[in-house]
Image (cartoon, rainbow, N blue to C red; front, top):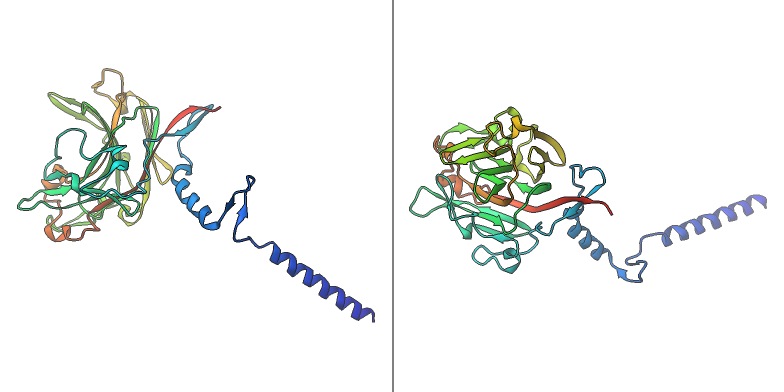
Length: 328
């Protein structure tokens, strides 16, 4: 009799446990503190929209500061056709280089070779008809940035000998910061040469120029070509720079600090800026290009290579800008 009672008690406990477990399952919708019903689908969509903004900024904003998101940032979560970009694109971008120059060497920047589709800004390359030049895309921000500022982009380097670039340039072309300059292809058909050295590296550097007579300084140490064994064309990667002040630049790849250049001897040893360092407001430029120092060695895409549109498309998922401000 005692044994039967014990079995009955166990069965009652199990039924109660199962009942509690089923009522603890997440409902198909839940009510927040304001009484608004949010479906799981809405939750997912909200996370996607916020994700690019809320990824932690890897740089230190400084004692007593926080990072403030800047509206110049762009998630490219809209459509901007190549021949008619539309109002949303035009709010933030000029559909060309920051002056009328059409590009270096074999480059021919064209407005119809940049577009926004599938959540990405895309720079597409193809052969200019009846020419050895290459049509490519280039856009410039309508607002300039100046230190202190953190700028970061999520990019997919094109699998080509062409350059995939996100960079900053002053209005007078005398000061430049390269956030990413990369060449994705491991082989050049026309040069019949192995290009793996470049495919494994991202160029992160800055330039100080004098235009007349032309002089160009940039650091030439090994650290300006970052390598960690990754083939950068194979996936999206975040690339960023913290322009902290005129004599301090920090470069970040996939959230990791990979390079710091600071002090007069690294920033401007020739005193091109008369002791002021990298101080001028700059445009943000996103583009692809065929650079002369490579095409002069025949390291430029062949017609056959250019037929592969995907390989010759540089993609930018988003670009975001933050300023350090005092915490409330």
